[in-house]
Amino acid sequence: MVFLEAEMSSNVLLSPEHLTPQGLLLRKSIITRLFEDIANKKASKEHGYFIAITSLNSIGEGRVRTLTGDVLFPVNFMCLTQKPTKGEVLTGIVDKILKHGLFLKSGPIDNIFISEKLTGEYKYVPGENPVFLSEKQGKLAKGVSVRFKVVGFRWMEAERHFQLLGSLAGDFLGPI
Picture 1: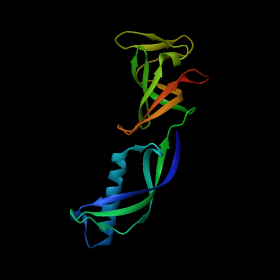
Picture 2: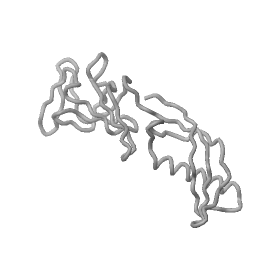
Picture 3: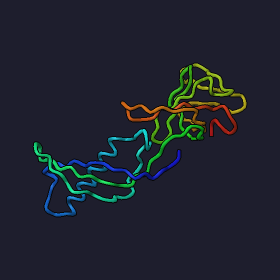
Picture 4: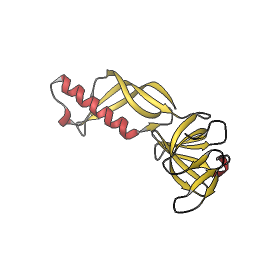
């Protein structure tokens, strides 16, 4: 996946107990809360997966919410992101093998499916520990590292992650 650095903005909400007269402690509370908010968001359709906040560009003036006393700070920052693209070649670890295909994990993406039809010369072999076997390229079993090509992907808003469809059909794809 390609790493991108994106300029982003967010609103950080601090409760009154985090507000202190010392400026540095207030700044620390804002930064800590921003890290928590980004970790909870996990990803976005536009930017992909949030990897790290690289710099804090500005913290705007706080606005007090009248009913709760919470203070809302507009924040601008730079964030390192990772977004899948169609046609990209990635590596992943086989997580689950089923008759109709296999599931992989790669970096922050834990929902990659390769259909049996897209495994190339591999054939499903059932058993207690099922595998996909190929006479020329070896076997695909749970825990094996695999190089695959991204055929398509879809953003799942409710779960806040991407689902990928991969393929092993092609040169230099398969177990590593």
